[in-house]
Length: 132
Image 1 (cartoon, rainbow, N blue to C red):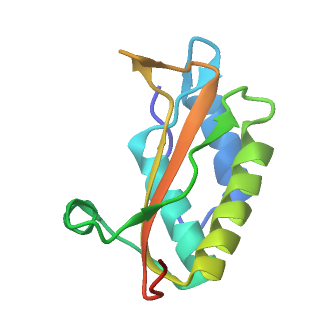
Image 2 (image 1 turned 135 degrees about the horizontal axis):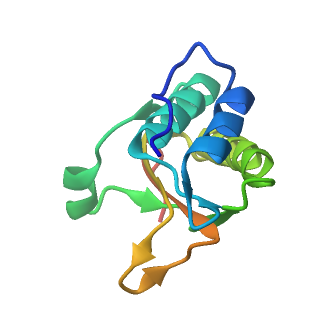
């Protein structure tokens, strides 16, 4: 079943509750690609940091990566865990002085990445700060 699109009119908690009901695979939440877009919008609102495709910057060695996180894909805890993840990522991006960021937010069940009961959250970013 496909999730509703990344509507910005729906409060984020309500949007995530709808995702927890609609994007189900084998009893767990498997977010559609539109969910990532909505999370990026929410993080941008909190940080004034712009979402972007950072492939070129990554290849050139100009990105940094946050430690990968996992959010529960259990439909009962998915919303609260995701909201906490949004807050944590937003606070970290602000603290790091990030100007642009890119996230991965998915539940993969193929190849070596068979999580099923967890949604991976990976963040890479570009900062104006020069750190050694």
